[in-house]
Length: 111
Length: 114
Picture 1 (cartoon, rainbow over the protein chains, first blue to last red):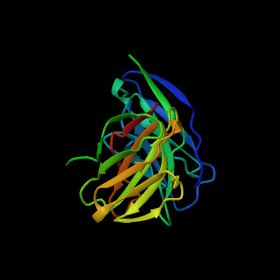
Picture 2 (cartoon, rainbow over the protein chains, first blue to last red; picture 1 turned 90 degrees about the horizontal axis):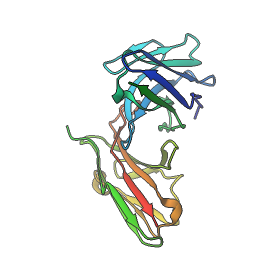
Picture 3 (cartoon, one colour; picture 1 turned 90 degrees about the vertical axis):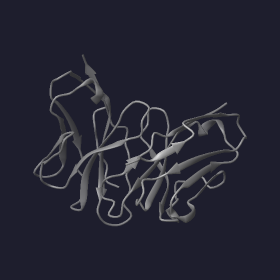
C-alpha cells in the first residue's frame, strides 16, 4: 500500500477555513485519495475521495495537485464539531484493496 | 438507515478470560471488516469478509482470535484467552459492492483487560 504523510497536529480558529495537507509521492495511477475523520469516541467516517480532479461535497473539498503527489482537504468554515483526527488514505481500485490508516492529523478548533 | 451496530460498547475483563464482540453491518453491504485501534494509533485491519468468506485474515492473531460471519450478515469476533495487550477499541465496518469508497464504521467496542 502506498504511504501518505500528514502533520501530526494542526490548530484552527472556529469559523475560519482549514487546509489539511497530505503528501503521497509514491501514489500510483490507480490509487484514489480518500479522507476519513474520527471524532472522539467514534469510529472513522468517510469525508471525501478523488482521483485527479478537485472534488466538493457537503462536508469538505478535496484539492489534488496536478502531479497527484499531494492533496489538501479543505474545511471551508470550521466548527467545534470538526475537531477530530483526519486520515488521508490511498486506495487502489484494483486488487485486494483495503483501508490502511496511518496516524492522521489531529485537528483542534479554537473557539 | 441504521448504521453499523456494535455491541457491547464497553467491556472490562480479567486476563485469560474469553470475550466476544458482535457486529451488525448495514443491510446490503456484503463486505465486512474488523479493525483494532490502539490508543493514539490509527485502526489496523484484522480480518475482511466478502459475504461469509474470510478473504483477508493475514493480520488476525489466530492463536487466540477467531471470527465468524454466518449467513453473510452479522459477525462475531472472539478472543480466547485475552491478554493485557489486547486492550484496544475493536471497530467493525462494512462497505457495499464496488468498495472504492463508503466504508461505514460502527462506534466500536472498547475492551479493557485487567
